[in-house]
Image (cartoon, rainbow, N blue to C red):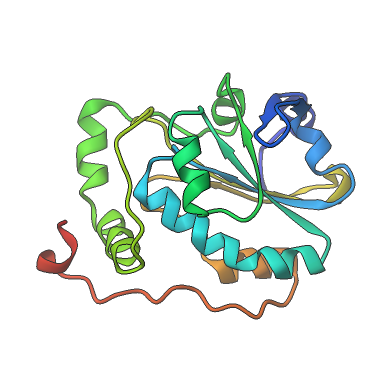
Length: 201
């Protein structure tokens, strides 16, 4: 059972990237169920790969009345992220990072970030991203973590509240599909065989 208070986080304000308008978070689930993907930062190679992975579901989500939304904690790296076409859903900025705080998306410190960034989960995703030609950079807030929130239409309930532990953590496509109770035609990216030589770059 999720302890997310939708009434509390629902009034948090996001800025729509496309229009520049300010909207309350709860407006995103008012008429449809929503998959909210909270990125660590737009320049993050792992986030870009995860964004492209979850975007594979865009068509299936739309057909089932579910909206796909990406949220970033700042605008740093946004233009390059958009130009790369990594994400197919609507994009918003949480300029105050209030949603990130309210949803328990922790901040790393210099001591905890390095081992997390060098962990096996991150190395595996970096290998996948490299194989698909997805690169990243170090612009923006390196210490912020992210996650995912899936909300039923009308804010009826929280279907999924996922908080990253490692920067390489992400919700598998099959979990998103099962959580929403829909069918999907896409296949997730293949997990590579990972050893120290292959995954340290």
